[in-house]
Length: 182
Image 1: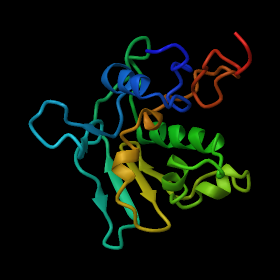
Image 2: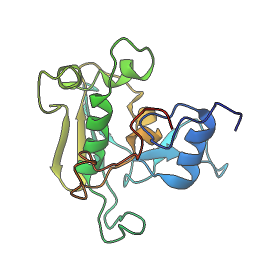
Image 3: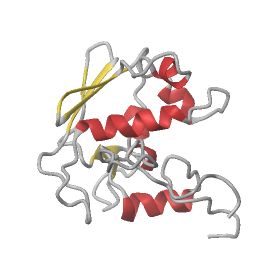
Image 4: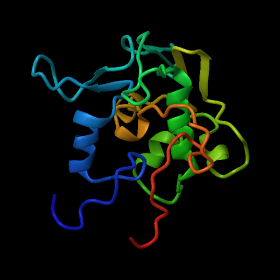
């Protein structure tokens, strides 16, 4: 990577294409990903941690993803099962750093029902992120948008395990960096 192109190792904050690829290939898994084997069109999202394609309501607003059962995090958290709330936690964490004035990804995520209210501190939850059972994530949008599987393939949508009990890791992640000078 060129000097100055690497900003950190937090999937929420890293926008460098090289680092995204490092996350995608080697460090995180997501609900959807891309088939890089050459056996299908690589530009189409395919299930990764999801057990199959999402169920989409007839009005295009509700997307239901089912996780493959028996998934666990890598060591040292190999005894922790990956569950639907872990994906909701990642998206809530992202909403906590959401800047409505910043173009790009914000446009797609703000279509999740309750996203803007949560991001602005008006509510304590995102009503459009639902986990009816440990292996089901339901996302309700305010308008139909077929880009959701693409967004969920990004490293920033990787599951975050439950907080290990550290006050420095309120969302289950301690980045080890406060944003100041190193």
